[in-house]
Image 1 (cartoon, rainbow, N blue to C red):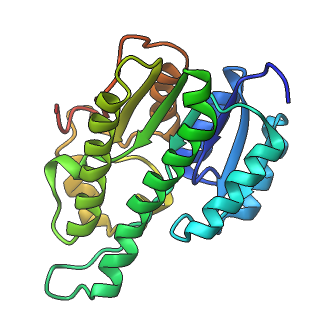
Image 2 (spheres, rainbow, N blue to C red; image 1 turned 90 degrees about the vertical axis):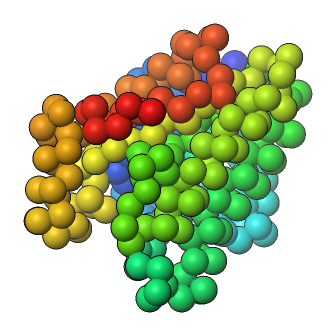
Length: 242
């Protein structure tokens, strides 16, 4: 407890989430690093940044989210920044995808919505201050074959961003999305070589982005950008302009 600013990053054990946690720590935040299955990565990251705490939950399980919120309350009396980064990508074309897979993808959106609701009520609305940053995707704007539920989820998260920013009119709570393009993570590394090559051909900068380049934008929204809300910022090397 104290005056130190606090940021919560979901899916913070690897990839873009881990880069966001490092960036926010460098900006002076005490960081709560959430993970579901990447416990070793989250623990290693916490050892690197020093000032923070670990949080574990399956965000699709409301009871686990509630337990995680209680853990946050035990660690701090403030949350200044919430980065909704955790997500899944369950890919299959329309005819092959089962309803169970669709529902599993949809649960990621529900988890972000519910955690945001709890953090708002317990911390940000009371302080009349805060930053909510949703990590979405260029796919939510362009669509992509074999990723219909994923594209739907990310587009819906951008809609949440825009709608919540309007609901919070008059409050000092900013809500924005950061939509990465083709970023060097495990998810993109698993793509077939020919798919990676085709995507690279559509990027004017001609290269894959780094997680740290997404995190730089998150860091800006967390500490500056005081007249930016309800906005989607694209970080994709020029492959889509919004």
